Image 1 (tube, rainbow, N blue to C red):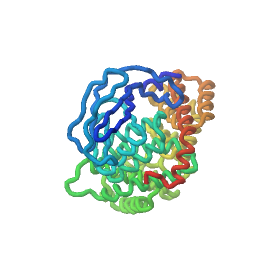
Image 2 (image 1 turned 90 degrees about the vertical axis):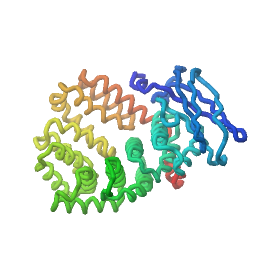
Image 3 (image 1 turned 180 degrees about the vertical axis):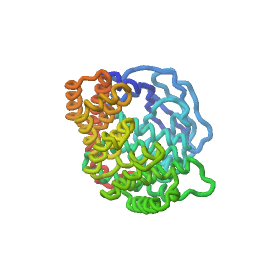
Image 4 (image 1 turned 120 degrees about the vertical axis):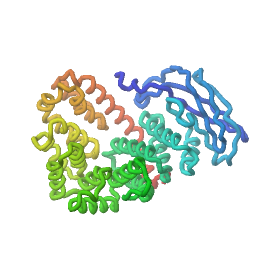
Length: 426
């Protein structure tokens, strides 16, 4: 196993709660958090001195101690809530650099605490972040992550929503070829609609940068997952913008451009290209180019890739266009992008090998694939086209694809059942 999977090594705290009457103790076992866990990596018995903080429902006091041994048991105070509402959160306030995992019943309690608004923003963010990382590494069932994330319906913090959006983008890439993908889109629409409704399209008096960030994040993701009202509003605002450019604020342009491109026909697609050609500011050109990678039509995605390698697109902008095609719609985008790189490798290598970073990006996006056949194909291609600049990257990508394939094999049936049964976290 290559060292890529070991680069995520830091403490994982596995928490088991023992409740007796109103008292509770937490038994915490530390190990090394590794993505290789999902492919059967060894459980290294590394020990750190870990500062641990534990919060309990209804108490202002936080239990703090320095964990010096691999396993420790500590009292964590008296119960102040009915047992069904008695949650216990380790790494309170996200004060330590570690991942935290719990028994299934404790995840349920914490999910209810999120729904009830009883955790602070840092803890809400950290809990969701941990759940996704644990799921990706194979410590936590994918359905547990989805059920937890469903409890954030009332969330208003912009940073938390950005984290949720990023997690769900990664999750979508993993299941992009699965028959329940549309059920996943429905799940995300249900999650994002309430906050999108609260945010609206128009800025409110006195709102700040984070309010604008939350608005653009939630509208972009809701539209990506196919909400018809958001898509209709984006198109209406784009038509208005064509007549009056001042009508669309800069902080919503990327969102509107992307959603309009997503559903574009040939005429709208060419209108976006025309705007790109006429844009004076490079920032606006790039914003429009990235929007053009978000069309759902396979023929237009291919056209975007073809034009990215022509004189219509500056050489330094072609790489982000190709990688964005691969990531925005994993199916079929990553297949099209990989074919583009494979078919034009000699030219791309000539252009970007001197930079190192750019040529590696044209290999790295392939890590989103979930097929072992694809891993073998990529390895075979670069054996036939050796390039020292990407040699290590190719190994890392192939490992990541195998991790993805293992993850999908482990979670596929449970996810299919979960979506079929009506999403228990709904």
